[in-house]
Length: 591
Image (cartoon, rainbow, N blue to C red; front, side, top):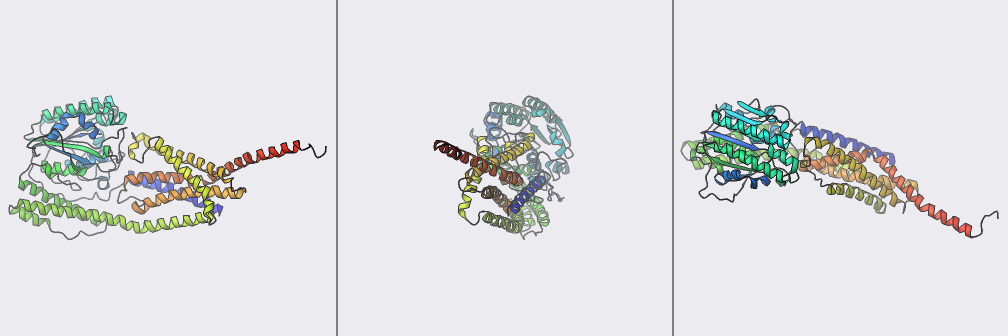
């Protein structure tokens, strides 16, 4: 039984490492099955002569108070609080802003993505409509959109990582952007500033440096704004992600996943009575691309999952109606292909042509309502198909998890000899392990979040240290178990079983957490991405299981070592007392 228990734990350790490796490869190397080609829709009437989209890298709401220009744009136009898609990293964020496709659809899941974006973008839609485009950004943008944009100016991305260098890079970006505006032929201009992100990584969103960087970028935005004619031009300012107060992003903290968007100019509503206090309307990152397409009059990027922010538009009723119809058509075309990939059929809904007929009859309000209703039903169809796909996988993962946990529970009962009393010391040891492991995380301020990585170079050391913590806490737990075992386990074999049961219980508790995640999200991610919040903890649990399972014989041996030390400590004083008593009672038997 002892050998079998060790074999089970070592095997679980090996399986956990395999799952951790596969899961990481699935996410980092995710190849979206949804980047299929889709016939683009028709263009519509444009409502602006030129659109300038300014992306302030790393800007969250923590920097907004230092940005009077940004707040002025929002107060005289529209202001939104955007929810960023997961993971909240730059490459996925830029891609979502320009395509309307979240990482699961675009395939851009991390900053390690290499190659051109494989889904339709605003640059592609503009090219089809004959709209000249320009990009002024860091060199990182080149790999993603270099083949799509008509003209681009790139600054040195490596130098921009340092705060001082990033400010100089932003000055270069500003000069190039002003040059593009003066040149005047680009009707869609994307401008990317990076110094706020550099300050966030260096000092955190709560720092004076972050506020100063935000204020300086705000002044640059003011320079851009001063060169625009808002009677014919439109400006939108937003961000790819925010920063935690201590610095970092990628996770799901409110400071990270909520970013501002302000817009003003041609085609944007103007409040009758602008207020200094801005009311931020909730919206989503994916809504930016279709809204930009509506302003430019281009077709909707074919893989967009967002919706036009109609409440921000100041356009005639027939323009709004036509745009709603084009959005519904694009959504239906995507939904049909999406459901085909998942082996499902598109539900029966009213044809978009019914809205088009109303539009042609001049019934624009009714046409808009019907188009938006069809669009909403397509969104629900896609969401329902995804839930059904993940649910179907659970029909396998849940029974498999139950079988594994049931087998482990049976093994635990055998080790305990069917007696709850035999579990007292193993439970104390296991509790010591988890209290120590999570206590170390708490003391160090470590959270289960990708925002813990302030740079990509910190990723592997972070997980390596969690494995080291697991080993250290395992040693502590088994030392406690072995030390306590002397109280009731006077034979070495009993002490061995107590230590073995303690290790087994720790592995069982870890596998329970792993199985809970697998039952819900699965273990492989080839056609969907997991909930990254739960996935982060899942990955840490797998690494712990790897360490404890693989080292179970050593840890059990340490438990026996602690038992033996306790035995020596207890036996030696008793032996000394007997020798003193013998000496005092009369000396040697040969005397």
